[in-house]
Length: 281
Ligand SMILES: NC(=O)c1ccc[n+]([C@@H]2O[C@H](COP(=O)([O-])OP(=O)(O)OC[C@H]3O[C@@H](n4cnc5c(N)ncnc54)[C@H](OP(=O)(O)O)[C@@H]3O)[C@@H](O)[C@H]2O)c1
Image (cartoon, rainbow, N blue to C red; front, side, top):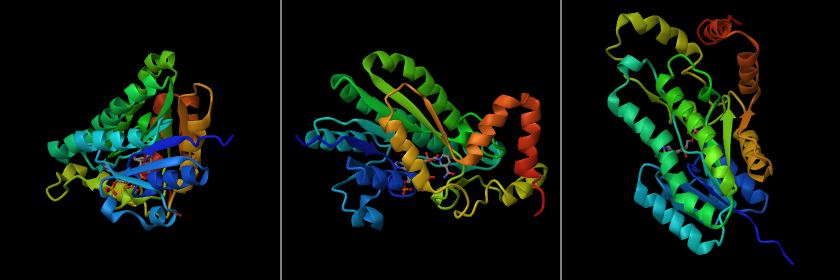
């Protein structure tokens, strides 16, 4: 008898990691529900591979979440995996980041992720299993200069997921964290929300200037390919054990390795050197 394909539901599938993940699960024969804020502008690759389910979902809009989830459960008897991928970064000094920018960042990266998770938990509970995959970041356990707001959202996701893991394990619901390093996507480009530096106090000029060469200025041809992250997400989806964290990309793996290996203050000095005072090539 032919096996029923499994189903994955992905947020933020219009570009980058979400798009690559939708494509990879589709290639593996899964039913893919790819959700995005603007399906009308959907990316050509998703058109080309002929995904049947491209739904509207803005993680900050509860109605859109419930409509997308309802449409999904009407069509598929079971949803095996939720990938909470939607997210973006605020970049710049905390002092010049507006309260609105901070609120929007938390509404998307933290409260949005929680709202989509909340919509899926009754489904996973009723079907007696499921996997909740949260895309965090290497900046979810490490802080980077000028990413205080973004990093704080990803640290929140890490703490949320690690704690949730215990209460969902008896329900046979697995929680996974994906921790990518720098990935070649729109993240450092159209998705980066920069703090206003027009009236920047002089005291910040030095760090902003140094950060320009590294942190806030990754052209999107640098870093790991999003397809590599997609494969790791797939691995997290099919793993049978209770592993929580999947650190992916050489930069992220090295950073985590040194974080564990060397004393914290030494680690901070190395990070400062790499991110703000890189050697000239
Ligand atoms: N790239 C990296 O270096 C990197 C590293 C670590 C972690 N990450 C994480 O990876 C995830 C995906 O980012 P990416 O690198 O693939 O960047 P990306 O190409 O900019 O993709 C971000 C996605 O999130 C979506 N999104 C933003 N706000 C949303 C909202 N309110 N509702 C629904 N979707 C929303 C965007 O939709 P629109 O097309 O509508 O804007 C887009 O689909 C993020 O959580 C990010 O924090 C990225």
